[in-house]
Length: 254
Image 1 (cartoon, rainbow, N blue to C red):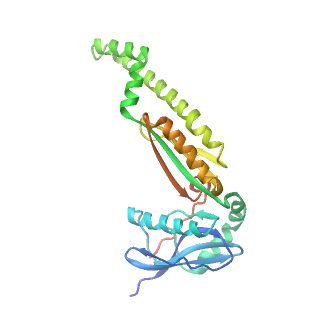
Image 2: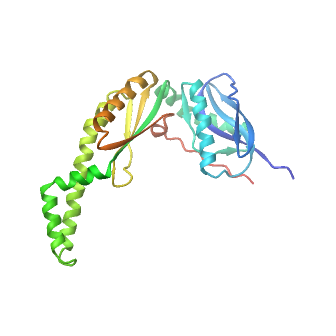
Image 3: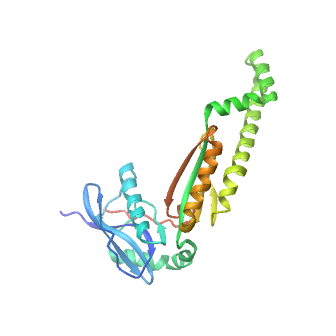
């Protein structure tokens, strides 16, 4: 029995013209990338076997690569989450019709805009040196070291709180020195959850494409100032993942 064919969607764009975005290698097969339309909105899609696609590294990279290729041609791109497969072109067009009020509102907000991300991670040696410079921390550590494990229990809690306050003060310095100057060049910004104890900033910025060079320069200036203390992880350009909230229900293939 032949495998049922479905339609996988990558992203939405503002376009009335049918566009051929070439091909992509998806799970070992060459797939054509095409558009399906409703009014001035379109979904970028490919025909694929109707099944559940697992978000392994290779599949996620393909999904992201298609969106990156689309961004080089289109200036208004709405990212769609990984793994959405529909039974037919008609189903995708119906979805697009249902989403159109949201798309129509989003198009002017993201037209000509891109997202970039910046993570700032403290260098381990620098953080340790800085915390040991704090007189109250030094004294408390000596107290803890001198006491037995049980006797030092509350002292250790207090030492942990001191360390937490120290990290918060460093995060505040990073925010005022690195993050706030960048927000002046951004249309919008979002601070995401800090991951791990050495991360001092985890932010996304929505910027106008025309501001990309100026924004890059500002990031480089900050890196030059902080490079002995922290590592920068600067990523993008991406579509506006952190500034759009459209989640689709995955259709399960048989």
